[in-house]
Length: 272
Length: 176
Image (cartoon, rainbow over all chains, first blue to last red; front, top):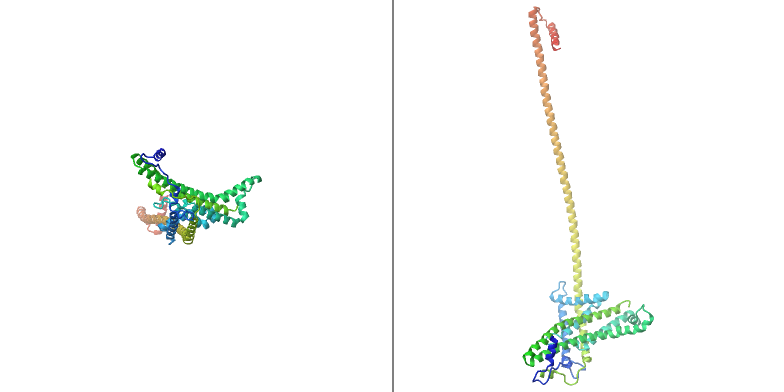
């Protein structure tokens, strides 16, 4: 019901106004401060946040690990918990005996994605850096290169591709169908889905919050008691979406890291 | 609507799935910096703390186990000592009881013997007195009888030997 009311409020242009509601554009939401035509830097703010995120993570963890005491303080406990969450929950869980060696990379990956996601709901910042396609693509490529590299190093070039594409123990005719499918899903689509999943989630989430915010502002500034009351709906919805985004930020960072670990495990595995 | 208008896009739109090279490079640099800094300074420290903690816990467990072993040994020793002491006490009690019994028996026997001795002595004394009295009576009676008979018969019976023989004979007859 709230949705219909909201739609009515948004669609019905108030009398005396010439224009109706204009939804915020992608340009406005993501590339509002690009340099030039945006082919080098599409948003200065996003890049500032990116660097700031890296600095914050470095500072926090350097402070947390400075003492490395046996009895951790609050800061060290927080840092260790974050690291231990990925180290024990993903790295050792998925990669087993290789887990410890990859724990650092996976934890870094998780934290990097998480902080670049969380910028989307931090007041004033409010721009998820990962909604800029370049960042998820870069991370997915890093994961792709790594799992290809460790797989080829362990099994040899042909051994690795055979392991990735050839499923033993099925009728030979099926290979005509399955080898291309396996190749596509394991070699080509993995980085693609990794990048698109993260990007699309953050992009869409930010877009939703922006539209809710614009809707509320539009209704509240267009005058009239009805519009004011209707404006409460997108405002409350927007706040709800922010909390939802908090969940998505953590979840997407976790999923990305988990899948990276699973892909690495598939390359390090002994058999298909 | 002025806010929306001014904020809305001007000029050509940026492709949202474009890959601005500067962003890729900055992202890569940021990620690599993070990897290096955390990987070099942070994760090893955490692993060190984990290892130290694990070692401490294992050491603690070992210490606790050894303490428990010691306690167990001490307990066993005490229990052994206690059992020994208890046994000893029982033995002492038993000894005391036997000793007491022996003393009682001894005393009882002594008392019996004393009683026997006293009664025997009494009996012997009585017998001796009786014998003495009998002997005295016999002598007295003999003498009186002889005197009496001498007086009656007029015959002197003062001759001791003959008189004695007569008396003896008489008394033997009496006793019969």
